[in-house]
Image (tube, rainbow, N blue to C red):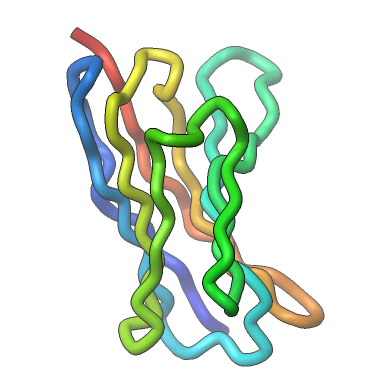
Length: 117
């Protein structure tokens, strides 16, 4: 069973940057795409998709992070990254990585990102 582990979260001031990493414990076969989601602290807040990268390298972002967040991957290291620039207080959330394969998906436990002055 492959496990995912995020790292790189923390406290940053508005306007700052963070780089999140998500490493898989092994190769994910039949991989379709890799994603980053986030879930904010408000009660009942839904998990939001913030970045996607497909196995062909295509990327996609919602308008809320487009131009500020960049997803990338290192196939050899089984790792996906999320570079977050120009962070805003509303980016505060637990960030989760997600690897989707044919027939299933894997999730990491999440890493906290707090944007505050």
